[in-house]
Length: 368
Image (cartoon, rainbow, N blue to C red; front, top):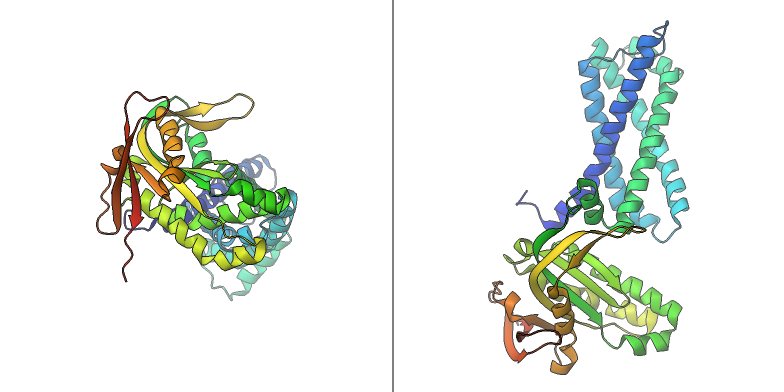
């Protein structure tokens, strides 16, 4: 999948779980129905026998229906109900998806009949089988299955949005159940003059500004393979595995893409809040220990000196009047090409460190 863009990979990674959930629940319900069918005196409960062709088709069809639901969720409904309470999101989406699923069932059932009985879609017996199915308990069982599956998908999507998809995936796979040593890049990004802005706007408007501010960064972070580690007030911490970011200097490109995103919405911010936010950032790379921590609340946490150093580098931005400061350790790993210009500023002995850190500013070389 190296030929796919980071955004395409991000979208696929969030759509495919819907198909997998649909497929697994279909298998579960089919096994239950098969058990009921064999233990029942009457064979009238299931209109069509469960054999390999129909199960194979049902598996493929339900997977594709799940993928379709994932596409609708990511492209349309996710933004349509953004900002609404969770219970409203689930109820409204459940109604929409249930109506859509019933429509799909009605459309796909004749195809199953064609596979099983070899009849044309317009054959009277096909229409008779469909009518019988719609009046049969099997239809209501399928409808219940669809509703249950949709509910599972919506709960999964809600948890994924709140925890973060990567965090949720890592919890499921148990990747960090035991502490793991990794090489990672960190960016600490902080809003300039945040205290002054907060006093001017008041805490409610300031919160709305922060929400819009972070939303503006989303596309840049996705397009450059970043992972949001934490939101801390007006500060955001973004992380990359070293191997993901080094080749194309994704961490550097991400910063300037975020700057461009803010500039594009500058007029909107001015109109809504009377201010257009600006920010500064520090970047550093090093070894961290990653693992699950917490008893009352689980989260995946990074531990290591690299985080402290990154935070202190970011804290030097005002002193050097720079928007982006990068450690020499990280800069030695990156190929900046002709797109960026690095300038050595200082060799600083940061608090808590025995050895000094080389500090560079990095600017974008804009073509005329």
